[in-house]
Image (tube, rainbow, N blue to C red; front, side, top):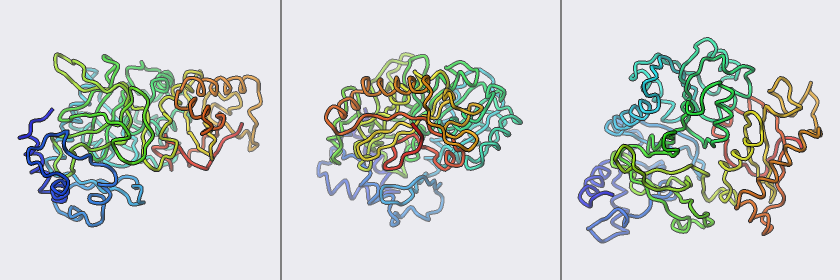
Length: 436
C-alpha cells in the first residue's frame, strides 16, 4: 500500500491541477491523518460534476496534453489532461510494457491501426523510441484500404483493437500473408477463445497475441502474461476490488470472485487518480509473486458496468464470446442486443455455412438467407444451450423471468457499420440485426 506521507504528497501535486479535489475531500473528510482506504471513491458522477465539466479550469490551459474520447452519460465527450510529468510517465510505462511483450524477437516494423484517444495518439512515438519503423492508418477508412496497407507494408507487429482485428480477419481470405508476427491489443475485452481463433487465422502462436488494458484517464494499466496466465498491473498502480453496493449507484451484486476494479496511481497529477473507479469488472483480483516481487494481478476483465447498462450489467460479454468461439471452428465476432427482455446474440462467423467467400453471413447475391441448414441450426442451438446453462447470470435471469430464452443468430458483416462502431463489444439496446 502507500504511506500517509506519500499520500499527502500525491494530494499536494493533484491540488495544483485539480483544486476542486482537495476542496471536495475536505468537505467530506475532517480527519487530517488520511489513509488510502479512508479516501472517497472517484466515481463517474464526481468526475462529470468536477472534471469533465466545461468549467474545468484545465480546459484551455497551456502546457498540457489534451485527449478526447467517447461521450459520458451526460452526452459530453470526455476531455482528459496530461501534464508533462504525466505524459513522460505514461510513455516510460508503455515503453517498458512493450519491451516486455516483444522481448528479444527483434521486430523491426509496426502498424498502428487504432481508434481514437491516448493510445492512438502515442502509438507511433512508442514504436519509434523502440527503434522500429512504424506507419498508421485511420480506423475510419474502408476495410479494403486496411488490407492493402497490411499487404504492402508487411508489419511484423500490429497494434490494434479487437473490433478492428475483427474487421481485418472477417474480410481477409489469407490473413497470414500480411507477415504479422505479433499482435498487441488494446481497447475492448479479448476472451481467450477469440484470441485462439485469431491466432489460428494469422498463422501465429497464441502467445503472440498480447492483450493490454488501459484507460484514457490512467494510461496503460495492465498486460496479459502468458507465463503466469494472468494480467499484471503496471508500475505505480495500487489496485482494490469493490462490490457494486459500495458505489451507491444501484448496481446489482456481482458473482463471487468478481469485483469492480478501483485504481490509485502514484504517478498521475493532472487527474485525481486516487481510488478511481474504472467500472470494469475483473475476475480473481489478487497479488502474485513475479520475479521475486509481489505484483497485483487478475484473471480477466469480464464486463463493464454502469447505470446505463440496465440488466446488461449482469452479463459478461467476455464469457459469451468465449462460449461462441469454443463452438465455432474459426474466428467469430459477437454483438449482444437487449430487445425488451430478450437477449439476442448476433454472430459474425467464418463458419456460417451460408457464407459467401467467408465474408458475408446474411445476404447471398442480394437475397436474405434464412440460416435453415441443419448444420447451421445445430451449431447455433449448441451455442444457445451453453449460454443458458453455463453462464450463471444468464441462467438465473431466465429462471426468474427477467430474461426470455436467448436467441442466437448469424449476422452480416458490413464494414461501413463496423468501422462506425469501434469499441462495439458491448450490449446494445432495442435494436437487433441478423437473421435466424
